[in-house]
Image (cartoon, rainbow, N blue to C red; front, side, top):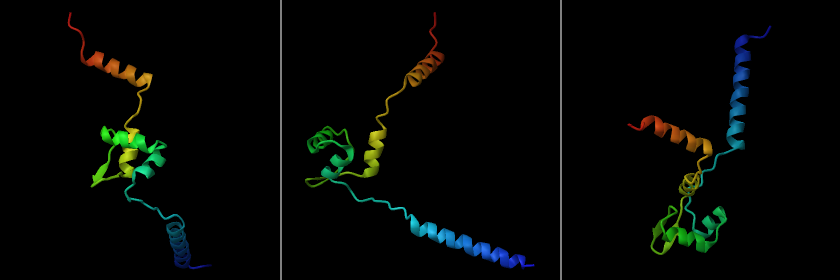
Length: 106
């Protein structure tokens, strides 16, 4: 009969090797490099002139260093997802909440 401590050590070694394999197999790469106008236009599938128009009207989050425009991918993603259109259920729920909170006084 094998020693239970040896079995535990063998399993622990296998777990450690599996964790090391996971770390090297799929490293998470975070790209915090700023994007330029061309990269943003490609990312959003818009023309370069459309990006310039969005920046001139301050509709899209951007940074300006001298004459150059820079964008952070996180800011662009947040901007995209802030434009959510409400569903009919959302609108109906808001209306019902408003009616409950503000009953008419007759």
